[in-house]
Each structure stands twice: as structure tokens, then as C-alpha cells.
Amino acid sequence: MALMISVSGIRGIFGTDLTPQNLSKFTAAYGTWLNGGTVVVGRDSRVTGKICEDIVSATLASVGCDVVKVGIVPTPTVAMGVLKHKAAGGIIISASHNPAEWNALKLLNEKSEFLDADQGNQVIEIAESGEFDYRPYDRIGKITEDHDLLDDHIDKILELPYIKKEEIAAKNFSVAVDAVNGAGSEAIPRLLERLGVNTVHKIHCTPNGLFPHNPEPLPEHLTEICGLVKEKNVDLGVVTDPDGDRLALVDDTGKLFGEEYTQATAFDFILSNKPGACATNLSSSRVSDDVAREHGEKCYRSAVGEINVVKVMQEHDAVIGGEGNGGVICPDLHYGRDALVGVAMVLQLLAEKGMSSSEYRSTLPDYYMSKNKIQLNDLGKDADDVLEMVKEHFSSLEPNTIDGVKIDFAEGWVHLRKSNTEPIIRIYSEGRTPEAAQAFANKIFDLLK
Figure 1 (cartoon, rainbow, N blue to C red):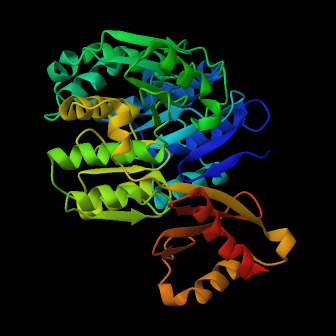
Figure 2 (cartoon, rainbow, N blue to C red; figure 1 turned 45 degrees about the vertical axis):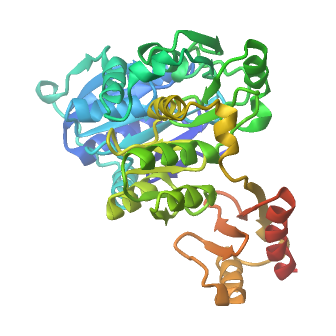
């Protein structure tokens, strides 16, 4: 597996692809691009996180950046740190949902947003040139620490006008948490305590980076917390990925909401309290459109990728945004996915509606997704040729081509995107039944035959 380099950072298996040399090279490029200033550096709980933090911090100082180390905190907490310290940028040392042997650098700009394509490409060009702005001994940056940032983040959530901790506390909720021994291990329980949730059942909340199950919050990996919810009769189950920006929910019967329904729930809550548009990406469920329509609002769509959603949110002044992988973006805090504010929104919604989590979930329409892929080597065709063929075949349906090709049918959709790392095209489809979702994908397979 080669080092994965993208506009938002670099990712690889530590010691094989993600070496100290690569960490230093890309960090020096980022610091050179910033031309000094303060950089907030945080990490998830991975075993390699501390050594990466040391390399990154020293390298940033060597190119004249002042470093504020914030330790093991969720990705959104680092974003809040950029705003708190009025920093030039931020680095999150985390490979997100990848296995424990991976690590990565995720790069933020001065607005606490992930780098866009132009910014990321500038950093990559500097890295490839090897022309770094190393400073002499009397101009290197200083390294300090901020141990209060998580509490500051939670303070800002509690200050949101639509989060009322007294109402949440009055419901005497019980909540189960699986933080996969990641950055949410201390953050989510501390948030719940501050919200007045007195009964918290924790599993895998030791931030040691030893993931007890596959860290991506998918149904097949979450049987343990579903069982715990039923065993302890709790009101809500909460699951985060290793860096605490994605949120999955379990209802009081031990059934998963489905990751697509995290953002739909947040959309429903915010639009009940604050009128305005919302936004998500092309591969996210139609349930978000349904929720927006119920509130008389529009849900705008972007290319896949958090920064793409953010750009569309800003273009349309959206009051809430997200991604179907459990990402909630609340612009009243910052423009990034944030599992902590997502948890607060869900509990406030349940408190206001006076419903159990399963009762609330039953009010949302059911959709089902199917995920497939096309092996280009088997077809003997180029990815762009395949996408053009699909676009032409379904031209009467006016396909969306801002990110691959998406075709909307009356009862569902299919979305094709080419991979940047493999000779494949990914096919995402959705319908009102599992069979219908697969049938939309089969339309593509039949066409290519």
C-alpha cells in the first residue's frame, strides 16, 4: 500500500508508507505554505500518535510556526482550537476510521476548515519541490500546550441557544457509549455529564488506540453496543469513530438508526429551531431531502467530501449540513463534522419531542442503500468512457455530473464515482427496499454488459 497523498493531507501505514521522513516533509511543506503563524496540533489515540505529534511539532517549529499541542482530542475539537487561538491552521494526526496500524495528517486552514483543492495542491507542490522555509535558531517557533480545549469546545456547545441542558437533564436519560478506544473516549462521556446525563454505560472508552473491533461505525461492527443498549435498557446508544467526527446512533430497542439518519436527525432538529437551507453530498440519502421538505426548506447537494459540503453550505447560507456517513456540520460552531454537537442535538430533540429514540426513528421514512463497484480491468474501458456512456444513456433524466454521474429516478437514484486509488468505479444506489436499491445498480451493470 503506497502513501496516499490528497489535498487534505497524507495517509499510510506507519513505518511502511507513513515514515518519519514523510511526516516531516509534508509538515514542513504545510508550515512553509503558512509562512509562520500558530498551528494547533491534536491527535487521536493511536499508538503511533505521540511519536507523530513529536515529529510534527518539531518540524512546524523548525519552519517558524508556533505550535499549540492539545493532545488526544476529537478532530472537531482541534477545529475549535484553531478558532480559539486565532491560529493560521491546524493539524489532526489521525487516520480516521482506518485500522490501528495507519496514521495520517489532516490539514486545516485559518478558518478551521479542511484545505480546499487549490490550497492542498499548493502544499503538495511545496512538498515535491523540497524547498522548505527552515528558520535559524533565533527564529524557530515555540511549542506550548492547551489542556482546556475540550472543555472550551463543550462550553461552546452548551452556549448554543437551542441546546438547553436543563431540559435534557430533566429527562433523566441513560446513554451507552462506544468510542472504540479513540479520541471520543473521554470527550463523549464528559459532554454527557455536562449535559446532565447521569447514567452513562461505557464500553471501549480507554483512549489507548487499541481498537476492539473494526473502527468504522458500520452495522456489522456494532453488535456489542446494540446488545448493551438492550441489556441495560438505555435510552440511546452513541458510537464514534477513532477521531470523533462521525456519529452513529442506536435506539432504545438496540436497533441502529443507520448512519444516514444521524444527519437527518440533526437536520430535523435544527430546522425545527432555525429556518434555512441545509446541505449534504450527492451520495447521501434522500431522507435529508424529505426532512428539509417537511420544514419547507431545500437540501442542496455537493460533490463528495467534507470541504465540498462546506463550500455549498456557505454558498447557500445553510444553517446545517452533513454527510451520510454520520457527519453533522453545525456552522454555529465551526464548518466541520462534529460528533459532540450531534449528540447534544439528538438528546435535545428527544427531550423536546418527548419520544423514545425508537419512536422518533419510526417517524422518518426508510431508505436502503446498495454499494457495488465496477472493475475497469474486466471491462477493458477507461473510467471516463464508462461515465460518459452512462451519462449519455440516461441523458433524458438530466444526470448530475459535478462528481462522477448521478441519475435520479422517481423512486431512487444511482451514483457512479471513479476511484483515485484503484482501477474501479464505485456505484452507490438507494431505493425504498434493499431489492429496489440493488435494482438501480443493476441498471448500470446491464448497460455495461
